[in-house]
Length: 160
Image (cartoon, rainbow, N blue to C red; front, side, top):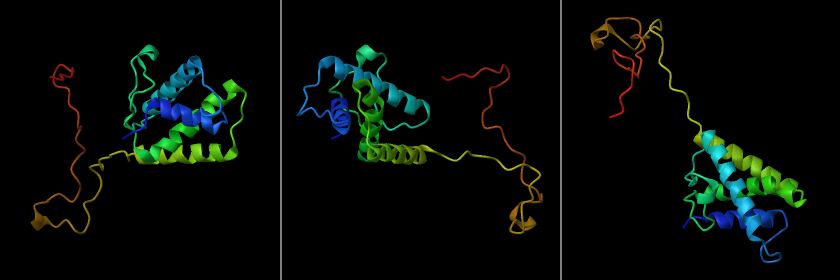
């Protein structure tokens, strides 16, 4: 069972010293934190960190009790980064441990979502000693790169 958006927000408030069991969080505070959570996750999504968080189409469509489908190893990263974002609005400073946790977790998410760029070797690259002519390779150089995306004669893409 994955975390809800409310659980991330409550953990973030707990991280800055405003835990829900001590302080009653007002609905406007929860809504403000929800908007910050959604915008932070949208920014991460734009950077290529796609971890299954459901982004709303508008701020009014976001629901506090919606499950997020975020993997468990990203939970601490999300609420610690959210705590850093909401702390100044409440006049709080975040501990250095929270900052380190947030930074390390964010770097870990970036590493997991990063994929190496696929490249084709140029046609001027020699095949090497392992490619003998009797293996159906009569050319001592690699084949020319192939454009993986062709648009056709009229240069428009058809997605049907």
